Length: 237
Ligand SMILES: CC(C)(COP(=O)(O)OP(=O)(O)OC[C@H]1O[C@@H](n2cnc3c(N)ncnc32)[C@H](O)[C@@H]1OP(=O)(O)O)[C@@H](O)C(=O)NCCC(=O)NCCS
Image (cartoon, rainbow, N blue to C red; front, side):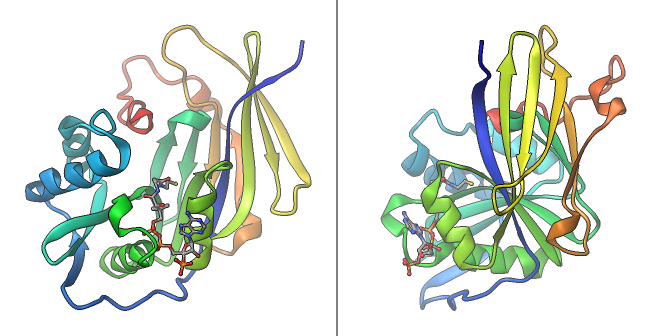
């Protein structure tokens, strides 16, 4: 029986942004507040359909210290992205990303289809870099998401490693490949009944792309009973 790949994504890293377009007349961008949740939902609905994001999910993210950046064009919400700091569980990959101070995990980048290809992503990232004081950004992009790989690549995000999650019976396998496709490692863990714990810890160090490391974390593999699993559901959305 062969392994079935469940999900495969590229970790892209940017130390500084490049080729960001200036804001056009009528455009504003900045960190979103709770009052902006309806505007975020409006963009999400146009981009992902009505079931794509819920108000509760977005409010929970804000409550947990995640930040959103929102771009409006002549008052109309056009695009947003989210930034997480510290440690973040990437649910589809069943791994936890651990970032150094100064680094941000950029996720749920979304531009309303009517506003795409206008450089919105770079403008949002510039807002995040400046407002959050970032000196390193990490994005995790599905291997199949050509538009996102291109858009993030254009503004400075370089592929660092690709992680493919496969499953064989009760074994989960994370296969990691470097930017040029060479195998970096394979990590095996046991799939548990019920909620799937995060199986790998992925630490990014400040000193450049080569220090992006994946490693088993025994503590993460055996979460303490009753410990809050604050981010387990987030990336399901
Ligand atoms: C990915 C996404 C956020 C990009 O947003 P965007 O605001 O349209 O991106 P930008 O206008 O800033 O893109 C800048 C550059 O990226 C590249 N690019 C963007 N979309 C592209 C596409 N569909 N195909 C090829 N290249 C693309 C181009 O080089 C583009 O510059 P150009 O228009 O001058 O050629 C948007 O496509 C989106 O919302 N997709 C659905 C949600 C999603 O997949 N999010 C990413 C999760 S990781």
